[in-house]
Image (cartoon, rainbow, N blue to C red):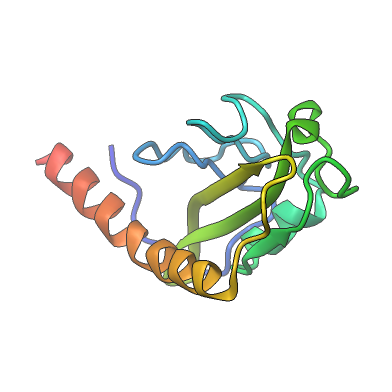
Amino acid sequence: MSAAPSTSPPSRSSGLSAELGVRVPQLPAAMRSVGSGLELHSTLPPESEIVAQLLDGQPVFVADAATDPRMVTGLAREYGPVMLLPLQSGRRVLGALVTPRARGERPFTETERTLAIQFASQAPLALMMAEAQRDR
């Protein structure tokens, strides 16, 4: 079942899923991530400043997840620099790309940030095309 594209601004109450390839409509306003980053089911509360920024389509750059008060998950203490990038189609936020580094690792360079933002801007198209192919 495929949801029709939305032309309205992202809703803070709709939530985000960072599980690439899986879009969960009406997920409670929280963010999950997978892979070698923040563990599956690690969530940020709906009132989190980070969730609000992502839902507004803004990238979030965290210098040190272990000490940043916005990173309220228990797993944050294991990570240093983190990029959280919205995956948007138009004004609709489909999810987030979360790229953490280990504690003590160097910060992301401006070039790395720019490349990641460019990747995150193109990823939603690939996700939507994969979903359309699956639904055929």
